Length: 552
Image 1 (tube, rainbow, N blue to C red):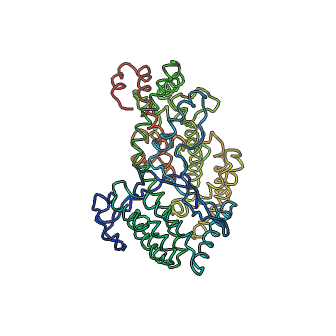
Image 2 (cartoon, rainbow, N blue to C red):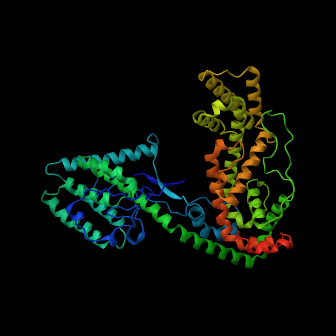
Image 3 (cartoon, helix red, strand yellow):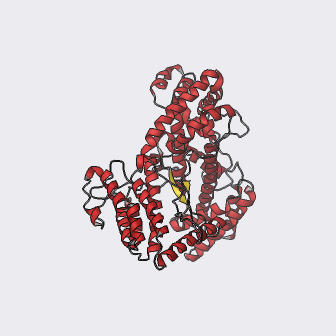
């Protein structure tokens, strides 16, 4: 069975909602008198919008075991193990502080900060060595089971082991209060009773499998209905049992993710209090622990009172305005705590790796901030390429979502070596983009680019490799403006009024903005009181009241 890995956003298994279709069940199931109190939540009749919890609310995941023909015993193909939620790389930073805070911060960083955190099965590529070995071992087990059931008389030893484990899985999907349904499963899949039937050759595997399917229909989330229904059409008992195990693995994963989502607010609040208390203990021992944090916020306040430099390079494109968008600074507005803190967070995305005075309150988030910085840099180059390309191809081509998506895919694939070899990467990008535009114009029956325009397009795209490139600087400023709006207004509201040149990367910006907001929000929840005290010394006295009352 596949292993488990962490992935980015997954739709809640209950999002499909509850439906009124009543599944076909066995007689025992249809007559279950357990009543509404014994049913999972959101089940007006027999369906749960979210997976059920296991015994005591915990999932029991085991390592995959297989058996080869001729080997003694018959271990069943176990469901995939779940990795510990606290697993992950250790971020860099001073050893003492990291070692102390690390253990209490991992959970909040992985779950509390990411509202879409979930677990997914990791499927090994079929062509990989791991994938080939797993497939060979699993096939050997199921072939062995088929030989046993086809023998005369049938050998039910492996089948009994499978049914025993299926029973355990079904029981683990029940809520603690579903005692009557638990008793029904215990009785219908009683191991001793099934063993006696097997000894007399009276074990009806298809009939037992039908009962299991009824239970799966009753307990699964609506998103798994189709998978369970497909199993009902399988007549071969071995293929059916194999399919049952596969779908049960998905159901256990649904339950695990539902449990994570249910516990997330409680875990987050607990981790916030724990992290703050731990940091306070360190601060009591090291009064200078906030020195770098104070310098960081002081620099942010200074940045807000200093006008941004204007871009003087107007040679890159005659069609792209070489100035900051409406974020250009005229007369600086009065400082506020939110403005200073937001500017400070934005400055972290431009942090010089050689600067060792990283804010102490953000050491645990440094690795994630570096990942966001890399993502921002890639989006800046991508949007710059698309903006220059649109100025030459016109609204006809860029009015086609298919063309824009294709150009984005081509550019992303060719930008993989941009960080190490920017000039060479942009040369390849410029030639490929020019070719895509030329071919698309030709396919649409439009006039192709003249030789002068084609040369100008390639030249301007190649200039994006330069850090001082005007188009690149404008896009970079606009992305930073978007992220600042996300911190103040939220991601969704910020997406409603994107600065020019960013609409073509709206989906990528939404992902970046959500990650950035989640990270900064959690950090503010933990260290907000310390920031408030520091900001009192930075904000002019006339704004001291705002510093006290404004929520960070």
